Length: 266
Image (cartoon, rainbow, N blue to C red; front, top):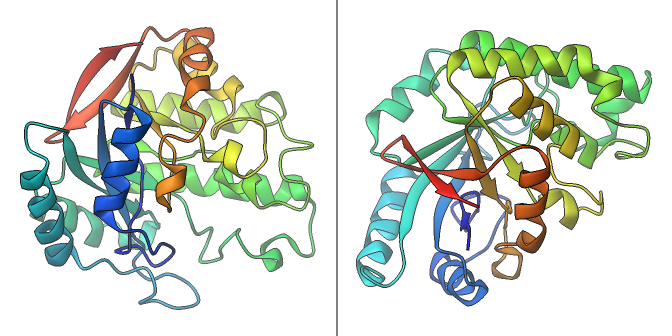
């Protein structure tokens, strides 16, 4: 079975989930292990303190659960950091100060605007809004090395006016290839995030075309996560993951422990 290495608990502002219940849900789903990756989005707009993370409290609770489930079920401790270029000095200090197993770097804000909200798309075409999002990823890649994989690279299509109806890898291949080549050059991975199915896209984030292109360009590091914010969404649609990854050219997936990748056969 697979590891679910992207999930959130009550330590994230947008979740009320109990961490123990998330573990029990994962065990019931038959996954081999999990990694918690609660949100840290410093200087979130419009509420700068909204996505702060109590990191000492986070480690205290999860270390206790690691002990509780020791020898029964593997539990890793990670974090999902919201990347913004002006945080280039702050975020590496945080990731270096704590013994995270895994760090996801994600774009949740685009030039201090959240594409979750409709006003991000106002006054321009959907394509222009999407391209600004992808451009912001390149800006983050120029500023940061303190992450292991880039999260849900086409996250923006979850919330666009037409979601992914008019979206494809090919339409944005010029900028997406630049992103993928930069990640590979830096030795960074990407994830297959099955949250896209939960959001009704019919595809993971990123879409299958991006996963395939990353592998074609020589990318090897691919983690798996459902981006669950509730116990019932742990390992969401994981039954689809092996075929998607194999069709993209992968024969293995990646799990990080102590910030080091290990590779598991699909």
